[in-house]
Image (tube, rainbow, N blue to C red; front, side, top):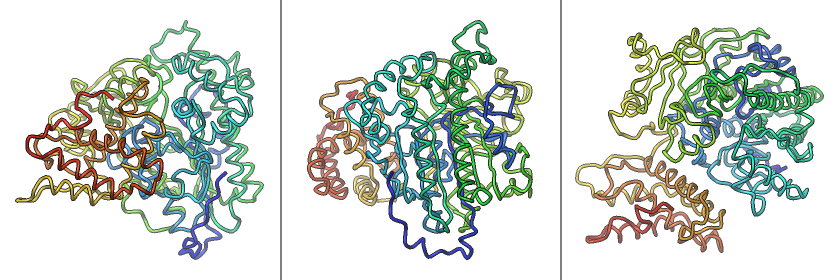
Amino acid sequence: MISLPNNTAAAQIVRNNLEDAPNVLLIVADQHRYDWIEGTGDLPVRTPHLRRLAERGMTFRRAVTPAPLCAPARACLATGLDYDSGPVPSNFHDLPPETRTYFRTLRDEAGYHVAGVGKFDLHKATFDWNLDGSRCLREWGLDGGIDNEGKFDLLWSGRTGPKGPYMNHLYGRGVACLHLRDFERRRHEPYFDVEPSPLPEDAYLDHWIARNARDVLSNCPQGRPWHVVVNFAGPHDPMDVPPGLIDRWRDVEFPVPAGEDPADPRHQEVRRRYAAMIENIDGHVGGLLDLIAERGELENTVVVYTSDHGEMLGDQGIWGKQVALDPSIRIPMIIAGPVVRHPGLTSDALVSLEDLAATFLDVAGPAPARWMTARSLLPVVRGETPEHRDHVVSGLDRSAREIELAQRHYGDNRWVALRRWRAVSTRTRKLVVSADLPTPALFDLESDPYETTDLAGSEPATVRELLARLDDDLVATLLGTRTPSHRRPCRQGSSRRRLAEGEDRMEVFLRTLEDNERNPVLVQLFALLSAEGLSLEHPSHEWWVERYRAIVISVQGWLTEVIDERNLPPGLTTETVARWLIALADGLRVQWLLDPDAVSRAEAVRQFADLLRSLTRPNTNPAGPAGEASDT
């Protein structure tokens, strides 16, 4: 476990009664469906410790994720920003290290000791966690912890050696190759391959994360409030469950997925393993609560259980997430501890995952973070109001390649195929908006919980009312009537600027780029290229082609924030410039690997500016060195 030095400035606390400030434990599962928890329905799931938590707290039945995908959802939570204000639109983007997070505010302004373990997924596009799991933790605002790989991350990062702490653990025990072979097979059938995990049970990922969590909690300083985040990897696919966990579910029968063949025995096996992973996490939740009680801190600790997004689990033939339907976007959420005035109640308030960021700052007491779109839930849990929001929004933007990968992994239907969508939900209605739908789709969430009957034609007034809840520019983009940047500038500040009359387009662009040299995009590119050990000139694997396309998308997203594409010199697009940046990074990466200090970001920007000037001289081919037709 890494233990980073405490922030000495934070030791001089601005809060008067620091010793009495509540601790905060946040437990985040990965892909835990909202209704697979005791007390939310008639499913035979076993979560006695979460039930115990709910009895001490408040359960939110209408919580949603701002984006049903790991990296953007977790970035929204960390920053307190909604999806359209946040800096991470997909799994192909990292949270920039300098981004303001609620972690940093708790540490630097409220004086909390901040630590965490597990799958943070805040640098999803960069498969390198450091072998001790320390990468970017301090920059994001943590004092210490272990950030580790997710389940399938190890296939892309650990084949030739560990890039993160979990695979480092498995290599050290001599079982890494066994695990890699197992997951190589499972990736072709991530749900229906239900063979038990071949790992020793104590090496199972969520067991390992739980041990790290106990270590982190045990090392929290006494006399100073702490915030600990525990990010479990389950119940995310694949269905890799140790034999001892499977045996407890052998004869349990579950309802089959909505719209699926009840005679298909595979559904029972998948659901038993999904339930087993949830029960396993629940057991670890109980262990963490017991440890806090042994420390004498349970009565002064706010405990929150939630998930980054949901899981379709075969309903309507769809698996996984990324879609606008409720099993994908709704999440479990329980808040317990001294802030709850009437324990044991449930709330139908409309809440979003990022609201937890504002809630934690409200618990700790620093001034509100005005950059956030999140809203504190304390007025609800204190019983001051039953209402929170009048609607919630979830959404996702994906490239054609990302959709192709999702269809391969989760199944092919009209919901999985939407490139860009937003879902606006109230307690009774949901509107899904996308240019890939003939018209916006409207559902009655009370009478049609599986969202199979579109009411848009019979309730046009409701459609107009819910469309009005979205930004006009966003609606125009979603409906395909306009093609501006679909993402609002991040509320933490945007460098984008318009061209003033008489200004030279090229010089404006280059100055804007130079003004943003602190953006780590070039260093990230060096790391991405060198971590794979491959050159752009010699792509040798299909997954490398996918990674390159992902990098192009990532750099394009950054460039969109740097400058309006309309300000580029004629013949240039953000895709062209993105490919040039990548080519530059590839050319500099050997130098950077030999001596990371030899090529500063400022120098890289200057070299790129020179390259761009030379390429845009008269009679220069605007196709660029990377070639617009190149797939790699």
